[in-house]
Length: 180
Image (cartoon, rainbow, N blue to C red; front, side, top):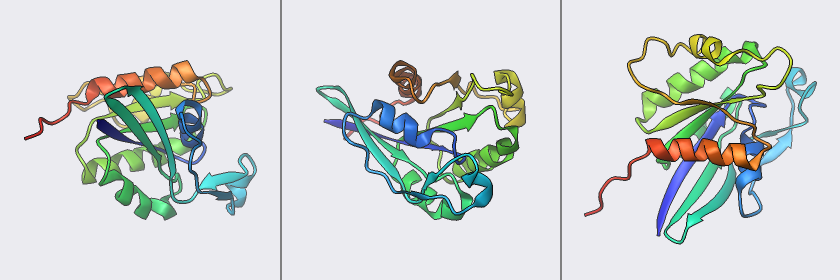
């Protein structure tokens, strides 16, 4: 049995927990707690403080384990714990909150300085008022000067088909290492 471990990361409110809950075949293990940051509490009640865990069986030979990271930088020690165990990751970016782009860029840099694993960027909240266009978000994340073909996909974290398509895009980036 092959187990693909992926991290789902991003800022607070990007849709990480929802993404995992939408596609997981098991009840998601989560560590959500009431928000203590008054600014964030005005639009969100709870936040992940350690991790979320979900599972999806692809076929009789492959299972995906999904680990959602906390979105707040004060919990970045959990990012290291999770990232040292995963094969690939998805960075979710809420495109209707441009004030969060700098934080998403920091997360991207933080991860890429620690691990070199396949990744994609999932753009969430594309249907919300004030949502930025894909090309503008790519610029804001500082990805225009890279010589890699990084997949950037729209994803509705509440829609199982959209989440599944995002996972399939990530799986296309991942090539398992031959076992000896």
